Image (tube, rainbow, N blue to C red; front, side, top):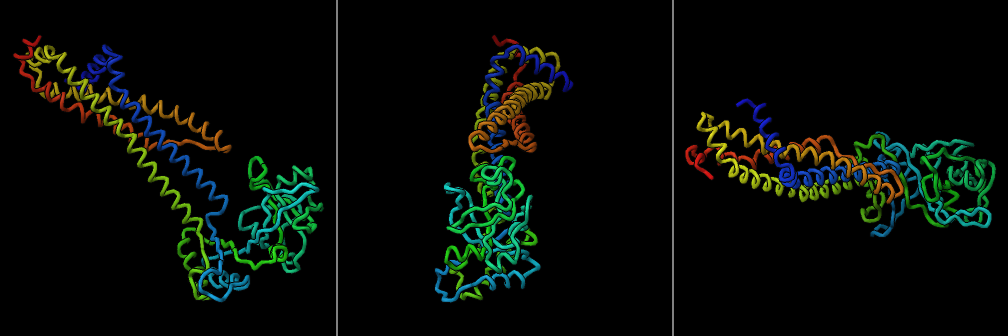
Length: 397
């Protein structure tokens, strides 16, 4: 029997009992759909986390000198700048970061606005560009000037797009706005990346009255994040004589750890969802055994006319594979539909774009597994059919 004839017979038998075939495929449909949606959610979450970390800078190291260890020494700004200068093949820029008091415009206190003291290199480190006016200069830091650069949200919300030259009050000081950043987000909003005020770190240090203990360092190549982190840790350990007095965090390593955790969770959930594929395979085997019983006389007639065992075997295996593959196809279509809805719901829930993106590889794998399950679980009924005695089959009622 030709393969095309076997497929034709398989489709004919499926059409004669549509409802039974659909119920048989249901386990496969649900399993494939679940795997696709779960993998899509995992990919979407991974992309969302990557984008979130990218906004923080995956090429950065965050250094905090806590002074809580056994060391009696301290690290000042000059020491940190020297560490970067001495390791310029790995490290590029550094900026002390100092939290400043809340900003005030008129009588309104901006509690959610980020106010931070930074260096003249900080905007370059973050790939921020100044749309109006200028950024912070070394002279501003050296002379502890009362100037600041603000985000586009504040510029539009409180200054009607003309903030440069105006003032804002921070910690009781009147600060002159010398620059406005280009929009960072598509829609600048309160509490977002555009709701910021940056002032010279020396000015912020004087306001807070504390020693600077936090720094942001950028790497020349984030592929050498581990080496860069080790260099900074070794240098600080040598200065302080104690590795418990500081903490160095690599955004790249954090991102990799988060991605690994997400992948583990996705694999576990996909494995659980794949159990329904096994259930679907058992359903296919069950219905094929019933089909063999129902078609015993047909098998007897074909064998008495000279049909070989392998032809009977091929026919039933192909029928099982076609049933399973159809279920896999419907599962893929349903999976994409559910993924689209899930993406819209997730975007609405978090207030940001979230795309549920099933990978092509995952889709092909799910389809291949569904077809393979049909062949695997269809083999036993097919073998039973192929081994029927034609005389006994002809007398079967």
